[in-house]
Figure 1 (cartoon, rainbow, N blue to C red):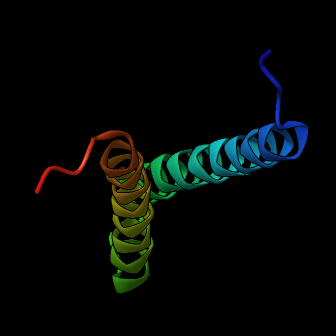
Figure 2 (cartoon, rainbow, N blue to C red):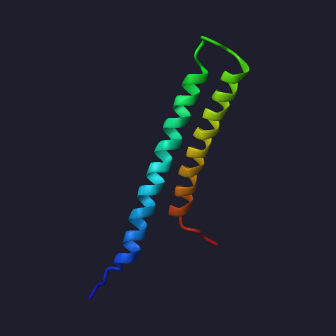
Length: 77
């Protein structure tokens, strides 16, 4: 007879929800900052910093995706 480990299932569900929210926040924040820094109204040093911060957030979102892929891949060796 198969038993379900409900505690482990709950942990997986909570971590999945948290990581999904974190990824969404990183991606949307990065897109917003890149778009805000690209407006031609004022091309100052501040807009370059905003754009750089946006690219940093997009990079973190990409690293989060790569880490998820790493966790899914079997380790051979």
